[in-house]
Image (cartoon, rainbow, N blue to C red):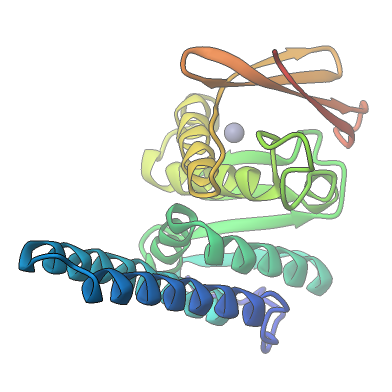
Length: 260
Ligand SMILES: [Zn+2]
């Protein structure tokens, strides 16, 4: 499948790129400095070798980080990803995808796999509002609705004091993994949805781990116009997110609290 409905001719360098690159280079320099210090002061050859090997590990991690940043900055819909929606929504969606690819290895790997898989194309319909669903809508066979207005209600980073909060990136990873699962399952959406949704939760939790969050999404309970998401670490709930919506499916509020 081509990307006939994509309306973007080119993408500017994302605003985060320079800062992300600088932070990676600073981390590499600090790792080098520490390793060189240890090598210089090593009491014996074994200690020296250990310091060298530690440096090698750091270099590998940083090389992967650079590669992710480059792939994220250059990311544009390929043979496996079709976007539909207004040009502004496509731009906002891709800005979000690129930002999250740069800072999550699991999400980066997922997007690179989707984007190059011509046999299993994913179709993302970007809704300005009113999906009747919260955040996204699963249609099966790779088709997924993403509600950009609902997504905008979520923070880009966990707010101060609530490190376990649900973020845009977690839900983006969820939506994309769920859409991809639909291409593989080839079942009507009612049968495919629970399986695809489970893949979405797994991807969201992998994203959370990449971002240094401690807990994983463990349950969700719908009660009227409210959905409560619990996050668990070490077998107990440590964070609870409450999402409220109106009758049309628009998210009207997101409020979380740490569970003591
Ligand atoms: Zn889902």
